[in-house]
Length: 356
Ligand code: PEP
Ligand code: MN
Image 1: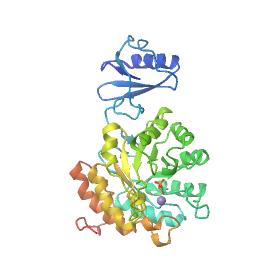
Image 2 (image 1 turned 180 degrees about the vertical axis):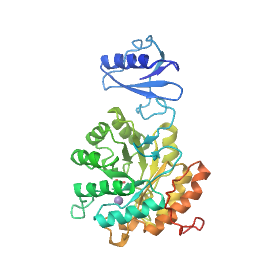
Image 3 (image 1 turned 30 degrees about the horizontal axis):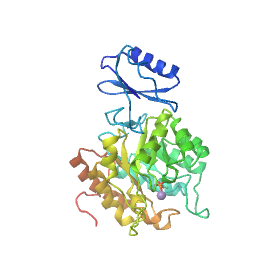
């Protein structure tokens, strides 16, 4: 159910409607838009009786939302969601392309700092690095845990980077939300509903990765779980799905980007590192992701990929990341996007030539 308020409805009237919704045992989600405020009504009981809200002051109409996802839908909020970060001009979902880069996993302080220094100089505003790694084998590197989070908090201090890192369960989420700026929920956890609900109660934005075999609807429903708990800062991420193709680790489904943008106001970024699993395919697919209209990229970069403890094959050398950024800088304006340029942008990087 969606309550559409009149364009001149007062804050007082919006508050009164929300209060009424809550009194009736539902949850109210006011979504202010440029023209008017809409209030999403959720609850797992039966639908709200029509007629209870219609006559309240400031209400224009009450609409049944027929789609299974409500709060993620453009029916509830027409304008794109722009995720903002306190004390920073960086955004995800705004005009500027959001670039998140860093190693798959935080291995040592030196490794993480070396990666951070290079990615920030190349123009990334966000730093990624796993402290908790969901690995296929229990015998491979599982991450440094809290020590990894501490290193990333130091990186934020030193370079001004915004920290994105994965929580793999409710326990790690408590620590991740304390140290990081964005909570990543990985592909393997896209339908871990208790984790999604817990992330929905956090005040930090959530980067939600698409499950390896998730349909568009299942992906949006996972985002709905987070939003239904009151956290509206959700960023979607396409990271490839399982197909019969064996020339890449996953098949990067770039058609998901416009499909999501049609249905949802949430930002969507692309992960060509996990999406291809091959270093030589990361830059070409990054170009394509920007061209298709993605709101950002998340890229694995390691100072010494051949010695990486996880995902070395898909991690870029820092020089390759410089090149990727130079290429993305050329494509972004064509689709109306800007790319942040730090003051200390290295003079040695030239846009133009494309590596194949
Ligand atoms: C990661 O970002 O390192 C990761 C594990 O990603 P995904 O959940 O997409 O596999
Ligand atoms: Mn990885």
